[in-house]
Structures are given as C-alpha cells and as structure tokens.
Length: 153
Image (cartoon, rainbow, N blue to C red; front, side, top):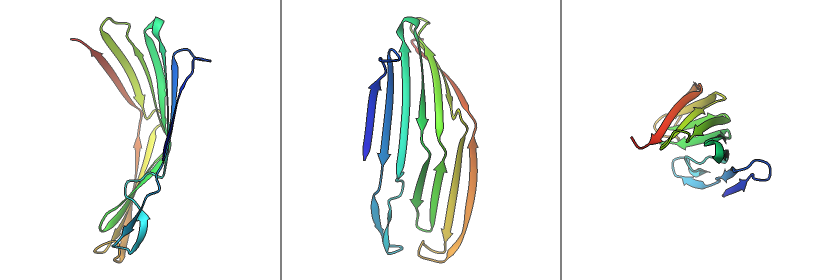
C-alpha cells in the first residue's frame, strides 16, 4: 500500500510544496527451506517520507528538506538471514539561480547523523540447518556536503 499527499503551502508559505508519503508492505512467501511462510526479502514494513521545497522566485532562491523514517530491511539468503536497520534521517538544501544560465545547490545529507545496524545470522548448510552464530556491525554516517552546479558550459 502506498499513500501520498502533495500539499501546496500557499496559505502560510508562498510557493511551497509539502509532500508526504507512507508505504506499507506485508507480503508473505512460502519458504521451502524452513517449510513455512515468511516475509518477502527486501520488504520494508513501514516507511514514511516527508519533503518540503519553497521557491522564492523573485530572489532566485529555493530551500527545502527531506525526512526518511527509521527502517528495517531483512534479506533471507540460503544459509543466512541479514537484517539492516537505520534511524530517522534528514537532508537539507539551498539553491539559487542568481547566476545567469546556472543553478547552484548546496545539500547536506545525513544532517542528523545516520546510524545503521547490520545483523547477520548464519546457519550450517541452509537456514533449516543448525544455527552457527551471528555478526553485528554498527555503522555511522556523518553529514555529507554536496555542491552541485548545473548549466551550459
């Protein structure tokens, strides 16, 4: 199920657009290795995304942000189960078309520090075999800065 809302903000912020989306996945798959139903690999059960952009045309300037909700993604491989989880993440940007024929944008991704955890569970032979241990890795992504210039050179 995908639900999205695009809402102009002209009532309180001129030339703004707020976009909100929600995705829910609940697919099941009969797994012959374990002999029962399980979620489909790669399904993210719940995900919320919010983005906002405001164009200040008279100033040749725009700004905005994006927000991604926390998530968990599980993959079922022949001899392991891998889960990947992440926290709420954010991105902000400013851009200008002040310079003739060029658009310049500064973007900061993972503005709130992105944190990810990957857990791998291992099995002997296949996932129906004897449990063989696990591995956990914690990852941290500091804010990333990107300067982009578009135009005719």
